[in-house]
Length: 283
Length: 276
Image (cartoon, rainbow over all chains, first blue to last red; front, side):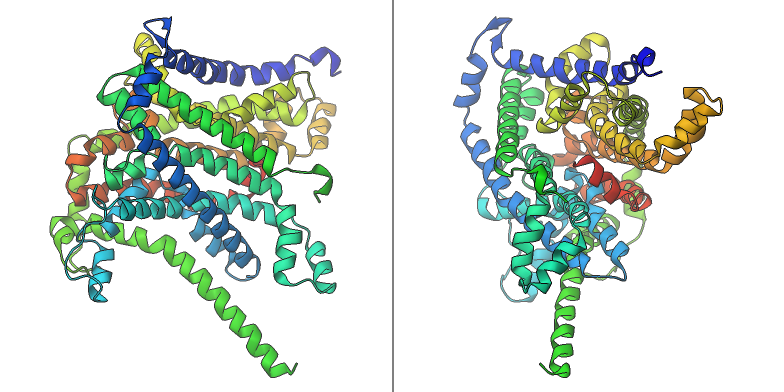
């Protein structure tokens, strides 16, 4: 029966294949071609313009620093949240719902939320003022305060982006069999040993996909930066946006896009290699 | 160890645990509360110094004024339109693919899965950059449909993988029993499989909606006059007063929070599936 109907699955996946072909593969190739050509002739002019731009070095540095600061904190927070909620019986659903709220919040909205706290007459300054730590309103989000601006953007990103990591990790933790932990407990393993020797290795697949997802997203950071710091804090996607929309130079924008893709792809391969998932050790 | 000190130790640990949980809940909720205060406090609220965290001097008036600002309501409708297209396309295209992955073994299945998974390694919104040119040629540039199409690229791989998991959860035997009783494959699908898979499909649709609703970059690159809400807010950002920015933030947050609440039961099942 299945033999003469072997065309069915192909018919079912055809729309997705065509759609992704037209709107994923084709633009991907187009981006690369736009980046390495000039008026239809292969050329490195766009790359040279990108590299010699004044914001190029800073945007690479800023994007990497932000990713390096944000991703590990998010993973650590998500692991802590997952461990905490596994010890709770009543109210578990409500707690998890509150913690997942930021999942529905865009990076632009997150930027505006933290703007209300970090702006000159905002709540951070009010708090510092009432504690006597500052005497007058202090600006944190300007060109002159790069460190404070960096911390502000990182906090907003951590606030918004941790939910997705938490969900993936909790879903992974739910699949760890209780017996493993109980056995370790009987043999006298400390909570820390149980966590590092039992839990962490077993949730490797979840960790891996959380790391890939969050890192790719972190290299895409843009709107939250724009909402908090305007153009005071150049990042890669922000530069691509400016070249495209302000300067109308699609070639240099594409060069930035290729750079971002190469970095994301490299990060993905790095995680696939480093956080190895051994299928035989899975429960 | 005596019983007394043991219970003391345990309750100290429980106290620590619950303080941690409460602190993390506050970390999520307090900023949203504060931006709502900003959105409802109007111009005078922004310049109030020092601030109070109590809801004094707030009213709906500033927020309604923001909604009546030229362009806000239209861009709100555009966002709804783009998200509607994204939901429809990603379910209509993604669910059959998910069904094929769940029910059939066919040559090329692994390559297809690879194509779907490959999208995850790329910052997809960036692909809007080269699409500008083709969209201008096709008349899709600066249209809600164009934005919906690029947002579908973001949501479709997710929908295919999640629906695969959903259909795997519907027992194959039920479907085969329907065939035995004389249903065609299509009848069996709509009478047996679809009702059982419906809650999961609705949750997937909600996620597709949220993905589109929140997307900033592609929407800003592909529109000029027919902006979605995120694109509109991004472009007017530098010239809008503070309380308009907070009102915009609140307007962006409200619908997606409601939707996340609606699908909260499915969050973990869905992400458990899609992160495998």
